[in-house]
Length: 122
Figure 1 (tube, rainbow, N blue to C red):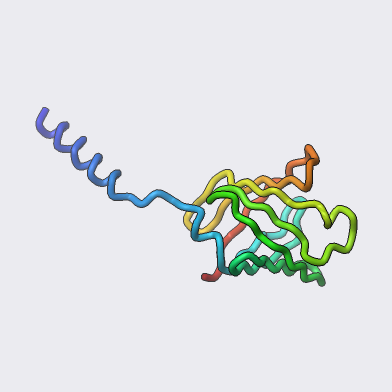
Figure 2 (cartoon, helix red, strand yellow):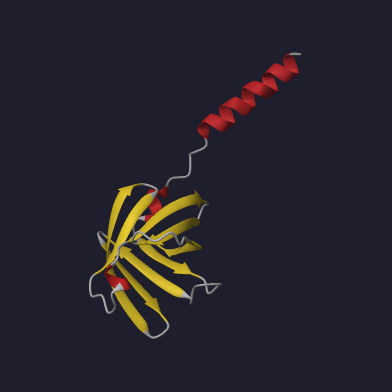
């Protein structure tokens, strides 16, 4: 019985010392969205309130506004089409050590685009 109590105590100590994963580390740096269904390979550079996206032969600059650690809004600074004028609402749905999964909605549409972003540089 003492061994079980000691084991439970040690597990409790170890679990209390683990740092919870936080989305804060995804607010700046260089990221990649790998090519997959619905996405070309995209390189993202975030710094302060600006996000630069490089994909295919295009470079887009967006403002990024964080509502909290798990929700942010992107807005094209130089929209080329009417749909580019709508904000993109992004929700982080799960995080890992160097990546997060997200759901994105353009404007007020009901279409939800899902994907995963990997941090490749600080």
